[in-house]
Image: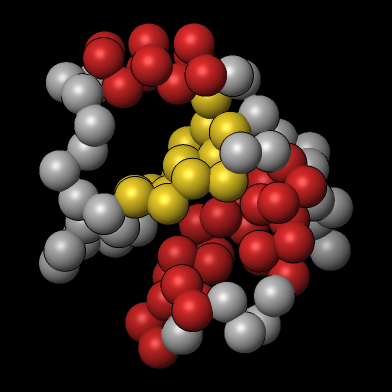
Length: 84
């Protein structure tokens, strides 16, 4: 799975996933193309979990806790991370 973090300016972050590159292209095309806001991609479940668990990840600093939280929610929803 590919995990996508959207970081809109002035709005809440959003995380979604695609099963593979083809699914990613289809989902982006269906939503009008690449999001206008900054995005971050993790190419697989393992890298997304490692990033989530890394307290030093620059994405999580300051207001970034919200980004980390939505990634956590998506990882739990896809059973990549245990809900504890």
